[in-house]
Image (cartoon, rainbow, N blue to C red; front, side, top):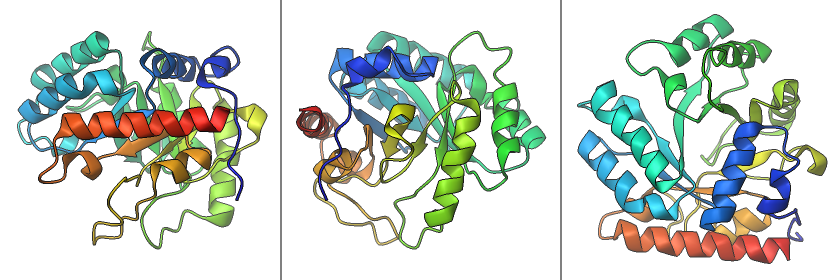
Length: 264
C-alpha cells in the first residue's frame, strides 16, 4: 500500500476546525515531535517525575489518573498542569467514556477527578450514540479553555470489535461537532482528507510485537505512513531495563523522521 500524503502539521494549523487541534498542531510543529507518551504508572511521584523528565520530547502525555493509588486533585493535577505549561504539552486523560449523555457529563465534570478542569483531551466509545458527544460537550460550557474529544474508532488489541461498519458510523458521529470532536483513536486514516481528523495511534513499538494480553504493535513507519498523526507509546519506553529518556528521544526521532518522509 502506498504511503498516505497529507499537508504538514504547520499548514494544517490555519484550516483545522478545532481550536484545540490547532493548538496541538502548533506544539507538534514548534517542538518537532509527534510522540504521545502513555504514563501508565501507579504513584503520583512517578507520574510527576516522568512528566517533568520527558516533557521536552512529547506533544501529549496520556494518563489514567484513576490508577494513582495516592491521588488527590491538589497533589497530582495541580503540579501536572503546571508541568504542561512549563514543557508545552497537552494532557490526554484516557477515560474511554461509554455511557448515556447525562452520566458522562457528570463523570467528566464532577467527582474526585473533575477531568474537564484539567485534561485538554479525553476520549469516548461511540457505542452509546450521539448523546455521549452531546453530554461531554455540554460539560465544557463553563470552561474557558480549549477542550477536545477523540472517538475510539479502531483499537490495537487482537479481536477488537471496532471495525467495519462500527468504525464508519463512529466517523459519522464525529462530524456532528467538529470543533470539539477533533479526531480518533485509530489504526488508519479516517474521514475525507479535507475533514482533517487528527489520528492518534496506540500499539506502536520499535522493538516489541505484543504483550501477551492481546496488544499488537506496529512499527512507527507503518503507523505514520498509513496516516497516523501522533504515535502513542507506553511499554516501549518504560519496559524493564529501558531508560525512559533514551527511549523517548528514540521514538521522537523515529516519529518525526517518518512524518517528514510522509509530507515530502
